Image (tube, rainbow, N blue to C red; front, side, top):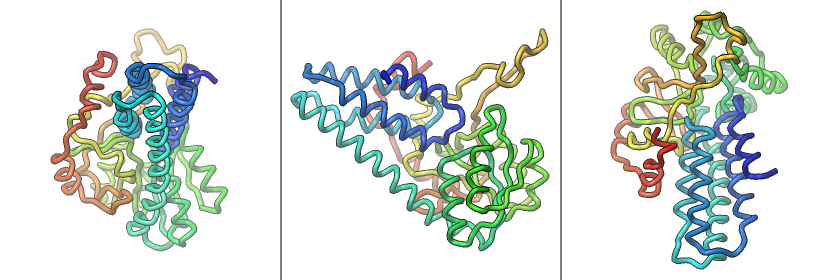
Length: 311
């Protein structure tokens, strides 16, 4: 598979969670680096900068792509000879993958604290992190039942429902609007997050309404994500919510009908009880204070000036 084909596959994936897509992006960069032959170090550095910019554009709402870009670009030191630069990038990618996987394991352990024994959990969409946490919770006796919905238009809720049912979890599955009525049955709501900023997070469209109703009905609501998805406000210019074809929602729509199809939306952190990462459980205020103190790395500031990304 060529790099172009792999990028097209990454771009076309509308159902996998951010962590799964992050692993695919690592594969793309690793394969690209392995094929490089001796050249001037600055040429390899420029080629990698173009590649990570394309990765970002393929999944423009996911913080894991931004952190991968930072990992790769910081490993490119043009004072190094070509073999040393190539090896440095490969080592950085290997460490990034290892950290991604270890973060997931620790996050699963941290998340047990928010789940009562034999819990009924309500969730939405198909987050790799949420899937891992729920499977771990099941193995520890903290999960009996999951309430979720189809997550249109990609129907990615089906993937999660199938995976949990195979593990013996009781599943209640509904259309998306039916999820709101099921809140009364839930002990807790858990959601994924593709990026977390000081005052809001990005997740599947519909998250905002669900979190708001959970707050009104006093059902604890948490976002689950690796700390690598925590971003300062300055990074917002590098991520955006992409618009997808309207015919996924309504093929051959009636004349005069504008069909909107945005997969992701921003939801205020203030609607949450907390954000769970591998580092612990943070209140919305803790997240804001922590991220307000962060700045964007110089390599990402450089990427932010790229016309295709800033637009």
